[in-house]
Figure: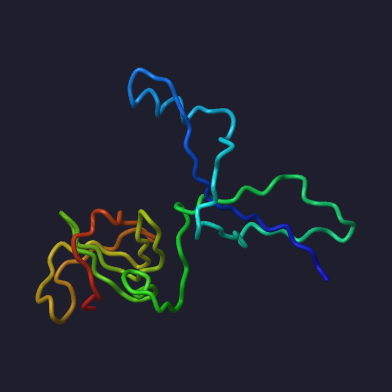
Length: 161
């Protein structure tokens, strides 16, 4: 039976006491700590497995020479075909329209993470025409994939075309 080396990662939370002139200085010192605090606790729900970086361990029992480095969870895109979750997750794989402060983006919602929405077949809409039906009056193709910051989205929904 094959053996695999699979990266796993989780989040720990702790407090540290820092002497500093102000809060900004304390934050800077805390970020530069060389040793991890001993009073850390596991953050429930943060454990994850990165199967994309998994490697099969060779028959001779030798492990790969380079260490596997897991990707930070918040920078990965979810790839889901079907989901019972609401919000953006429920629309993965569907054509959506994102109304942002200045622009309107449309395309197939292919990825969702804490910061961005990833669109394939993306377009920026310069003129909508009737919103309830028909094609966009003026929509220009964008390079694919296109990522839109979640915080920029004011409203969204299924695309009309």
